[in-house]
Length: 164
Image (tube, rainbow, N blue to C red; front, side, top):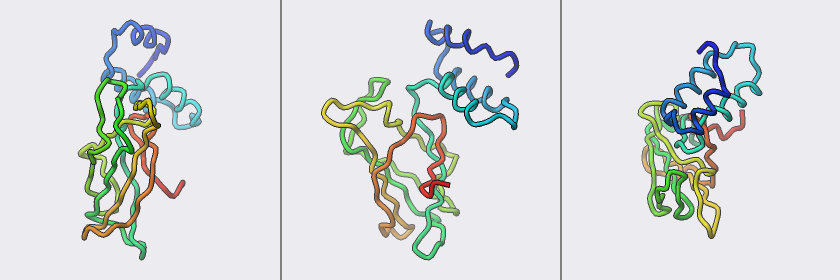
């Protein structure tokens, strides 16, 4: 995207003249068009300025493995909120409901079809701070991992527990 005018886009967002979908497309184009020599600070600024805070985050990756280091092909990742919460869009998100996705041949949450969750910062509950409980099962249904997790507010987030 050439001649990206962030101040113009910001004023149109405030005025409600740009939809969240269009704003996301602008953000993706802006980040994609950054020179490969740009540092991550520039990318982070573009994300913070252009990404609307009330979108669900697409969760991908993970690279989950069994105890022998084999990918958890065909396994399942299950996410459940710790409590009921209200989303920034005004929707009730139930803590009793589970969202699950089948892992691909490499033990990853696939890019397609998209698997999206509300970022923790977009959820509110007056009594407690909502977080997700992530549970990973092998293809045979064996429990592999269970831990609390915080989903960031991004267009897409690569879940990588190793920290690499």
